[in-house]
Length: 325
Image (cartoon, rainbow, N blue to C red):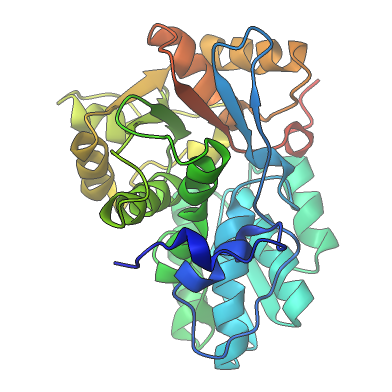
């Protein structure tokens, strides 16, 4: 586990690369960066909760953090062609960063992917391969991998968590290193790359005695597609389509790891109904925050669980990607 040293910060760098000394990247690698990270942390108008504006990353989601670290590694290793399966945000981020690094990119997406995300994929030059379902996308990308194309997976690649863990670093710094067990962080969860990265980051901060305790992590799923919530609560639930497409993962491969991470912090996994997700999206828009439905899950969960004090909500994706009226 990396040691965190506040004195090692590159204080004039206002991206996640200010933490480069604490990031495990290939030796001699030159960062591939579009200015990701250091997203604003703002209070709600009534001051009762904090919003971490992850939708203000370069391509509109927290996925830019993982993509920056991953593509930095790819470039250092001399890899020229990659493939990824994604419902949208991860693919958009990967396509942007690989375009910047002059790496060819193939993205396998489900047929129902949002028009905004597909438009972004094409704009960044990705070869977009449409599949009937998210599961088929996961299967077909492996055919490309077997043909020799590198699998740039946001679910499995260890460099991805090196990017998403910087959310924890930033929260600790933005809250003046005062974050501890009295705090709660609400995180939308599909494959879990954000939650697991945040957990890793807080573990490193706590082990390095930079913070006094681990904040509680709340993993938030859409009730219509909530395999992690069902497993955590010993429930049998149907898996249906959800407006929160960013977390519409029917078979998350790191399910047990996600549940264990949440339980280690005395947190919990919760699930939100479709009407509540849409209502939360509209409520945030009423505050001037245009997020996609997946990004509104944290706000919905905070309201559903009683509006606990000392809470941070991760607003993960931009509203322009869904083009919902």
